[in-house]
Image (cartoon, one colour):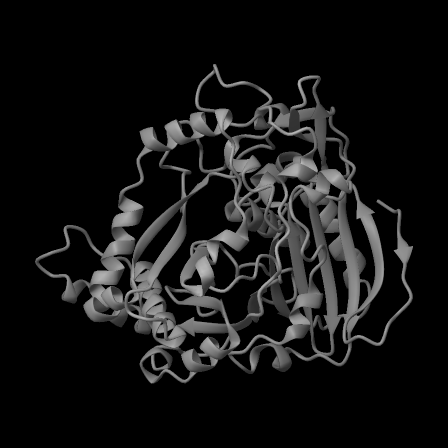
Amino acid sequence: MVNEQREAGATRPVRIVSRRMVQPPSEEAVVDIHLKPWDLRLITIDYIQKGILLPKPLAGGGIVDTLAFSFARALAGRFYPLAGRLTVEHHADETIAVLLRCTGDGAEFVHAVAPDVTVEDIVASVFTPSVVRDFYPLNHVVGADAAIKSLPMLSAQVTELDDGIFIGLSMNHCVGDGTTFWEFFNTWSEISRGGAKNDDLGEISFNSKPTPVPALQKWFVDDASPVPIRLPFSKLQHVLRRFERPTVKECFFTFSAASLRKLKARANNEMAGTATATISSLQALLAHVWLAVSRARRLPPQHETSYSMFIGCRGRVKGIPQGYLGNAVVFGKTSSTIGEILSKGLGWTAWQLNRSVASFDETTMKEWLDRWIREPDFEYMGNLSSGGAALMTGSSPRFDVFGNDFRWGKPVAVRSGPGDKMDGKATVFEGPQRGGSMSLEVCIAPEALARLVADEEFMETVSMPM
């Protein structure tokens, strides 16, 4: 758990003090985990980057080493694969296979300081300050880079502010989705505040004994699926497409439970007698955002617009347990025109999102997985922006964000890193008040964002910037 490297300071607001590679406290046998289509298709997008802003501990020094120690312990047992490395196997027929090799090489732990940055600087405005980007390691690194450049699957950065601490976590998206990400975060904070025993890590949040690494072999459609999956490329670099990152700005909006109840009631009332199912609070909120962003973009009425959402497969697909480690999500997409959603309003737009989720079909999903093995395709965030007319939402308000107390107090706020920041990305979190509140980080073109925050119909539903 050493390999520490000190770095010279710079004049930037955030200065890196040290980096170290942290290994799990116990070694396991080296095992290869075969990635499935859900994992491999995400090898072309940035690492997941989410983090929490915490109050400053009352106690003095030693907090960084304590966090590094609990970070290492969190990598044991169920999360041992996150301390591994992506490996590429080259075959004689000029195909490649990408594997997650559970080597225990470790995850990166970065210590940084930003003494001139305060908690108020981060949360006082709905606009996210640019300094937040520097609270994260592995910025603008895509999943395949981990194999090409031998990078860790997981990297944490602890940044000490003037009156707070920001913990930013970056995880390779091809080894896990938001569920995996936040369950690791929850485990780390649970260990840090003393809620775990050395020999019983599995009881932290999961109510089961540690899962042996061999049991983490990936779920495939059937036993006939080729293992590992061979990709029709001679080099992994051929999978990648680098694109020019758009100029965007982010705002962070929080909606109280009461505000969401009103949106939900309004949406369901507008569809009374037509809808055959109840529109959820999340669907009403996303429809509200879709309408407001469409107004702010000022695109012509005939212009096509779409909303893509991640749909979780845990609990929806037979054979995938709730505690599944890896990616278990599919895209659901709803398309319309700007004029149609603006003229038909909140209820109709929310109902389209409701139908997108309801249309999930396990048989169709399995057919897609089987087809992907024969004809692989990959997600490229540059394609999802659709010329500044689309919206996409990842994450979930069900993820436990504000329960991440590392022993000295619960988070003040949550923010995401610069990964995959495209025009139209809207990331949803549970709200700081919990109890049904939600927060949305909206990322769109600067001129459209300025109009969005000036939209009274939208902003009257916003409770606070945090």
